[in-house]
Amino acid sequence: MAKKLQVVLTQSVAKLGQDGDVVDVAPGYARNYLIPQGKGVMATRGVLKQVALKKEKERQRLLALKEVAMGQKATLESAGVLSIAKQVGENEAIFGTVTTQDVADAITAKTGLEIDRRGITVPEIGHLGVYTAHAKLHPEVTAEVPFKVVSL
Image 1 (tube, helix red, strand yellow):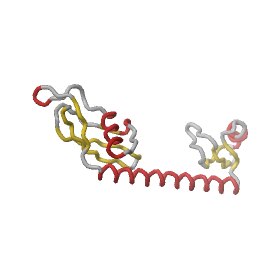
Image 2 (cartoon, rainbow, N blue to C red; image 1 turned 180 degrees about the vertical axis):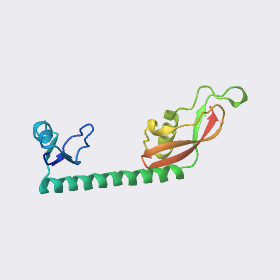
Image 3 (tube, rainbow, N blue to C red; image 1 turned 60 degrees about the vertical axis):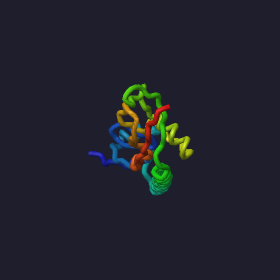
């Protein structure tokens, strides 16, 4: 049986690995598919050093994004209770619903932060009152945003 070769992937390959991974593959698979298609290069000392530097830069970038998200979380939690005005009917029941866009607009108006509405979850709201939305700022950082639904 032939010896396995180490190849550094330059693109993600299904069932094999992601970009930058070092994988052991059969020599024929490397020579006939991965290298000619530009999906991998032979693993040499220089290439492995480049991969290590690239991974370290990516780790630093992700750490910086997390730091920014932590700052946004502190800003959101220190902003206090946001106000969202809705039309009200009998028994303080609101017409329509409070959407994630309403919460995102209230956050922008009060703090100046642009939060993506797709990362915000809002509980079911039917009446006036105080509620809490959750804003996912980063895969590891979620902020609780209290808001009050008031009548127009």
